[in-house]
Image 1 (spheres, rainbow, N blue to C red):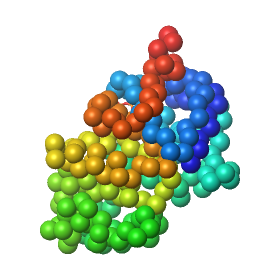
Image 2 (cartoon, rainbow, N blue to C red):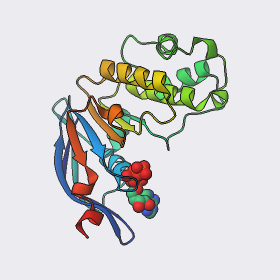
Image 3 (cartoon, helix red, strand yellow):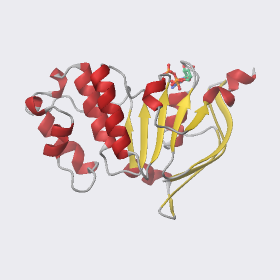
Image 4 (cartoon, rainbow, N blue to C red):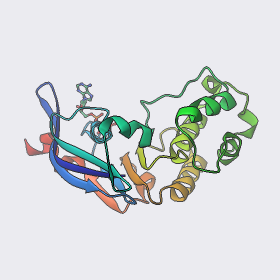
Length: 210
Ligand SMILES: Nc1ncnc2c1ncn2[C@@H]1O[C@H](COP(=O)(O)OP(=O)(O)OP(=O)(O)O)[C@@H](O)[C@H]1O
């Protein structure tokens, strides 16, 4: 998906979080959104994906050469973030069947195969609420990485992952990013090492200009 951004600005009450971002996110590109805590990375991701209204500026989406209305972006979006939860009252198998009804997996991939890719075979009948924090993060990442969606947003993707989990994330990120528009919000270099493009929020952050 292509996202064209012109003069994008966001403020909460009287506080400008970022101002005047003009940029084009191309299909097949991976971009790291960088900046210290509180600089506006998550706010930018949520604004770019149409989930937050910008205070100023314009966003234009297109996919496969056709314009996409902002209301249709969620259908084309896969998003993993600490503030987005999965339904925890279901077992892993139940959750995958439920979730993939409205967010299908890549062609040819089944919930059973996804469980194997996550190495969670022994937990297929366990309630998600009883997963460890690292298991939950692996599940949330897998649902985003393996969704059939051209726009992939990852906010702090290695949250709660141990060394093995980080290696798993990098392997599966490499396997799934081709041809997608990928944005990774992060402060941890290893989690965005595969992103050739870098955008530092403080370069257009309102606070940096004060
Ligand atoms: N709903 C809101 N209302 C008011 N201010 C908000 C709201 N959401 C975020 N902010 C403010 O916007 C600023 C940027 O927050 P944001 O979460 O985007 O930063 P971040 O770079 O993602 O931070 P972190 O690295 O800590 O996750 C912060 O000052 C935060 O308090």
